[in-house]
Image (cartoon, rainbow, N blue to C red):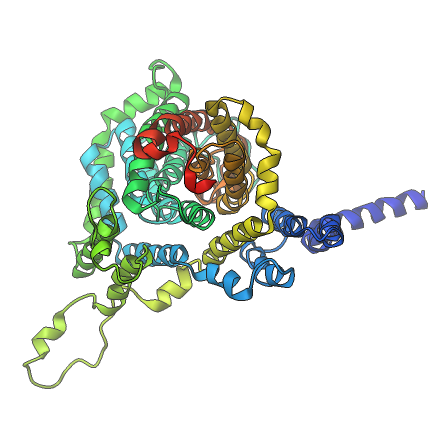
Length: 556
């Protein structure tokens, strides 16, 4: 009996040890498991396998998050120079490239919009414009979140909308329009835990999370995955005649991957969660009752708007500088007419300078101009300094600077894969796809991206897959953009799990949603994502980039 108890206690101790210290163990075990790749590469003097050792370790650490994502992204800084693949100067340059600078500038602009509260004013005005019945309100919240997510990070857009959705739903419950939580019989929860959101409530929360992910696909600055793809493509194919610029990117992604997909996602949530086409169902009756009481919700939104007060000088300036940044990005090198960068072409001008021009002005301009009345006045003068449109202390607190390392690490890894010959070796191993129809090959790349991004960081998966798809395209003699662009967008469209993308994690933590409901709700949006991406990759690509119909000479 004593031996049995001892074994049981020993087993529990091992279980506790593994539960609390698995990250430390994984940090040691992962490099040891993959060590044969490094040994083989050194013995055979084959840099491709040496680089594969780095890629395998980074991929496993990114997926398991045994150490922070941002720290993993710094592996190339010491590994690539030590292994003789790239110089330190070359590697470190990727961590503050033009694409990374543009990304950081975009984050700071987004923070300025939050700092001034301009985003809430846009959201509330749009909801009032669309209407306040449950279906219209759901439509308005989805669309405004999608629009805001075009310009600020997905996580910021979702975090901003969650309190607005909660205030609206609480008012619905207060007026006894519909239940916003499931009963203990419908979804049992542990004592002390908050009740689980009802099916209708989940439609609203899923709507803002999914629309944040979809909206982020619309512009280069919408999400880090887009800029990661631009950096990877530009690094691998510097002589490409098909460029990924701000206006061309929007023309490529917005029509189907954003506009069509957001309507299809809204439609799917209406069908599955809000009783569309089922007017006699319990949910259908609740939504109908809410439609009859839409004036109550309208009063709540109006009250939130009144609390914001009139539009301040701070908000106006941030709005104008944001518009200035968009205009500068659009007109830099639009492609269909000469841009301002073409006239100032003594040195090549990338996308970073116009973004940081607007960013620097945010730190320079004051939130108000009351000091003018003291210019010609007499003492005493106010001793308090005026705040700028954007505070550096605020930026330090809320800017995820580690994302710059994540992007830079991906670019360095991709270049190391190319120089060592690893990416080419992997791409050629997929040459069997050359016997398949191009539609099937594009479908395969999209499905792989959609599947992988459901379980790991979007940017990390993009860093891993895009270099492989690039070399695969060269091996089967297909234009690289046909395979890589839709696959890169697919990396942002993850709807099934809280870990899939930050918006999913935010609504899961904010509401206590159970994973099973998210997994089911994501089925139709994922299917529609695949269809939109496939159409974009096979048909729309040829219209936006006519040169992709043939294998390019510059890729030979």
